[in-house]
Picture 1 (cartoon, rainbow, N blue to C red):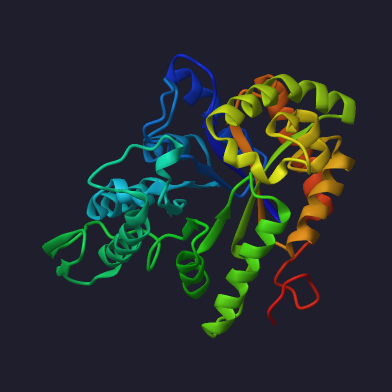
Picture 2: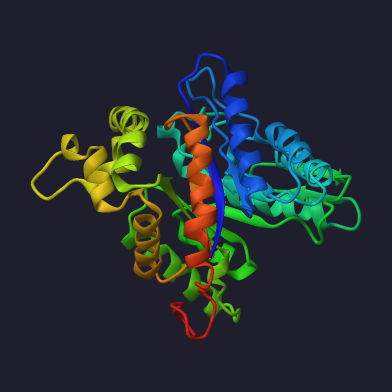
Length: 357
């Protein structure tokens, strides 16, 4: 198993520059500690002064400050943009990062604070997303100018330059619950990005659909391409970790319960209400992984077993949890005392947990 970051851009400052500096600190720290990748949220239309609507700009700056870590948006909201613009920006970004760029895409959700443009109603988001990614990939790989006559976009003499540095193009990842895109990811070898709000049973269902789709397409399933995100905080002791993370995580939880209650609906206890879903309850349920290195190891391993295995765990970042120094300490403890004990977990080994062979 490998580790990365999911920088989710959910701070509470009044100036975006300050939030971006904190996010950069975390990405640079993760790079120095050998984390494999960092995914940056694209938040469009959120009424927050410190939101990040242009992740590629951030990625290019982060690439100049790091050496090894791979960087990608999670995710480009394809229905809101012209595909040729997206393809061009991504190709340039691939060159500016020295081939460390990854392309994450999705459709977003109109009920989640995203702006609506050009009739991008819920029933059109997935058809637009499908046509968009097909056109984007063709922009990256077509050897000569071409014509596109689609339902949503049309053009002649389309010729995106430069082509991506990585061949035939950069790694792709999709965040979705839709079977069409899970199947596409499995058939084409795209990564599948899964939310830190998904419970283990839902993660397992998505993964099994991914594995079965790859098998049906004649591909060997690659669970190493599966990315699971979790909110993780580590301190020397369980008590210390819980108390340090409590204030910041509680603010986030209570804010989300008001603005996006559906995220916690699966966690409401039988006979209870969403009011019962608080910080301590979510830690006990394992949705939030907080504790000493031993406790965190145990809970990540339990998540791995419950889901059937995955390639990388993305640690939620971009949040005001504790201090900058303590967040760095948490990443260091993951590197030194958690990752070494989970490094041998290989979901694609014949003796591992993967299904579908």
